[in-house]
Image: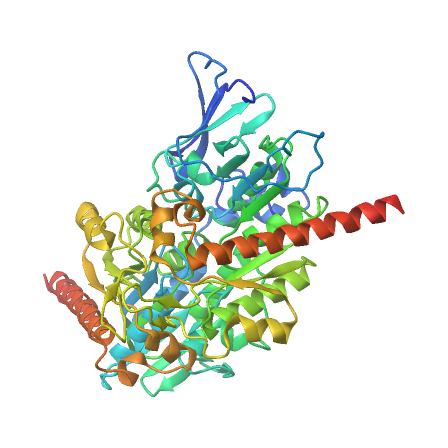
Length: 320
Length: 296
């Protein structure tokens, strides 16, 4: 269902196939017959595929440019440092896929085999998938409307042969739109452990994070917690701390108290983070003594604790 | 100066089975025709070279700001218009005015609460953008600025398509200095070429930070591949300017104030003003060319 009119009411809408904008659409008969409202068989297929994935974590933000992909990449690196764990990083930011560059995988391609698409491996225990690997050139724009992006996400979940994984991290674009609805819907039968929401300290960013938290509640997605990024900068010369993005309303800390969601941690600005990302390296190993590294590691541990606690609860329920 | 008598207030409220649905409120009594103006500091006019009768000051530039970031509408807060609402009259929806010559429209004005999430798929967002363009009564404007979300998707395609017959002067593309950002900007430039949208130029934001204590300059987002300057040379697009980081920018935005008037001496203000002038020059040059073509 890719060639949809601009004013498509939606395949599950009561107006599907019947609205004025449906005239001339190639899918009109299908929608009018009610087929669009039927459950997508892909959901069940994805559920079966996800049986080999222990924990699924979404990384969200309301606002762009707060450091979501940076965090996702370093969460993946941090978890994969334990060589006994299998980690997968899925990039569903279709228009701006930054993960290949950040993981040092630019120019790599996806191969297909009988068991599905192969992820691209950074390490033996760290595999990555992104639309970035499917482009002819990294400068190619992916100019797709919602339905086509949804199709791509479905393929990523259904057709990639991840194998047995401990952690699947999903990096999303900013917002509360097609990609976010799709990932939640496609994984609805497979269960998502929770979402990590990234913000910067200013109120303009927090305003969009509140919307994102609102979204999580509405789609019944558990919230692992909030990470405050770009939280202060220490001048390398005089060690004076500056709040470059001032927390005029108390930053993420006050917001988390108000909304009763956990604050996982605050990551200060460090120019080495941007440098590592541009060079496709793990900041955690490049600059192990940075306060930002310590903050990341602490946050990663808290996420692991959340997932571990959740597994124990599930096992107890099953054994009752 | 007032426009028209507001009759109906528009609000988005949740309906059964959907996060947000259109509903209209009919006011119980008509509101008197008084100037509707939001409280807030004056936004300095950008005087143009419009001809005026001798002895009279040229009229102020009329500016409109349209926010089509449906999921993350930040413009109301940044313009000090949080809590304001859109009114509707016979001639269409009224923008919300910061100043008499600066009107704003955003889905943010249509939410019951600023924390309400707008969880819409592409087609519904497209419908909202169409309404913004078709139903808002902007009146006579010199500049319509359209703020977009990141990406190259529904909103971008829709705005270009809906304005295709009306002609867009061009696009200003914002980036930070790192390669990860520039990579996506190259895609955006690619998008502009594909949809035949002229590029006014690129602005490099967050370009260096000067420590207030020791005045040492740090590159917080290091330009590992030469920043926007090198990219613009490679792709032959103009670099409009570089704006350094200044914590006062974030503070002004959070407080809904114009940083240009709050901190007039900041290097960032000077950078902004220079870039704004270059954009005006581009638009002015473009207008002259159009007039020449028409008169031929």
